[in-house]
Image 1 (cartoon, helix red, strand yellow):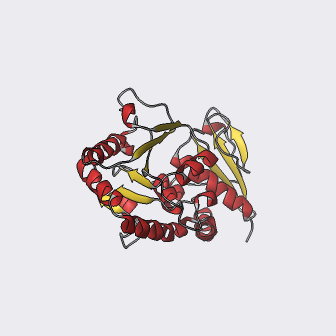
Image 2 (spheres, rainbow, N blue to C red; image 1 turned 120 degrees about the vertical axis):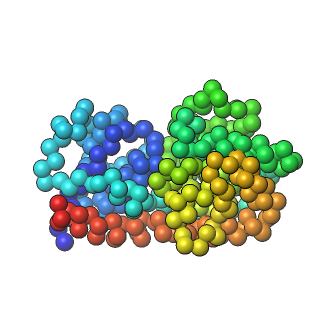
Image 3 (cartoon, helix red, strand yellow; image 1 turned 30 degrees about the vertical axis):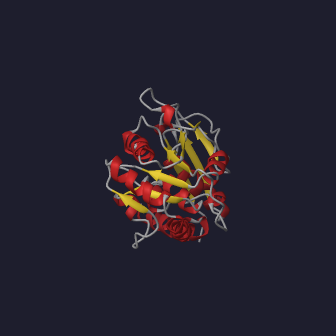
Length: 272
């Protein structure tokens, strides 16, 4: 079939799950021979490389899309790709004490970072030893209890985020139901981290069998903390979840996603 000419419209080039998926899709499609442009109102990209052609505009109406198929936003959540660097071929050794990763900007309530802090505090109240590692695209808010954190990382590049994920043992993902996919959670599974997720639709949709993580109700730091305690106290459970999580993450490798993405884009273009 004739290669596609595609355009992604990005409001911002700052670090976000949607931007990271768009870039991963763009590079994977370029590898398949398609032409991809990234049209943005944001600043030049600094946190990752991309082989796509960049077009900078003040208003998307300035962009002449003649001959291009503008990729619908829903494609990002329907066909997510996890960067290959996150995938691990074997289970790594665990740290002592365990390093528990909590990601996302606390200023965005969808991330549920406050519940993540509450879960860690609950586990510590019951004498669980852990190092709490924070990662955020933004500087911490004034409300964050930074005394509870052993490391705080801001604005990591893709390579740096991969290294951080691989240096941790557990992920707490306290996201709320407005979360459309949860790229960080998917990357953690690919990185062989044992995970505690909120039981929100996007996380439950990762696989029909909900055996790849422990789940707690959203907006419930105590239950999230109870699942964290369960995980911290059971090495066999951590091993099982790390193994199963890697299996689930295989569905997000570019080589498995792109054929379905291509077929969808051809269909959408022909119907347009």
